[in-house]
Length: 101
Image 1 (cartoon, rainbow, N blue to C red):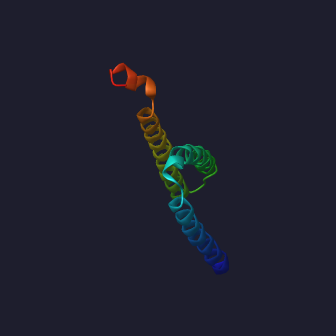
Image 2 (tube, rainbow, N blue to C red):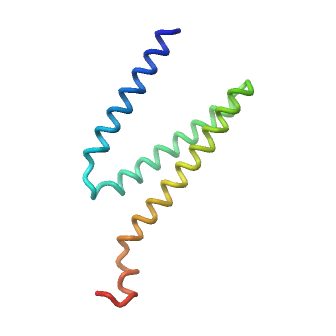
Image 3 (cartoon, one colour):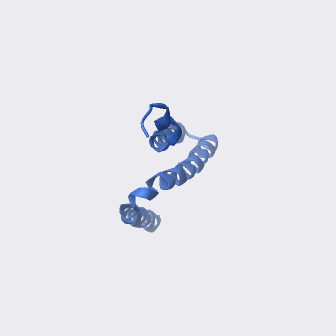
């Protein structure tokens, strides 16, 4: 059992390091499509948290599941709000209405 914990911890650390390195090398022009793709993944994580909460049996599992669902919902909602604001900055139809060329 202790070996499983260490293996899971090692995988989490390697995934975090790899994610940091990959995201750090993304050009500025690709941040919006990348954010849109990550929102899709966060939606899948939210569904997984809901399913895990549905299968919980103890109060501790329910509490952790509830926190996971709330945080996942906030993450998805915030991601879409930020993506919408970024895309609005590049909307040319709104720029023309103000009279500027």
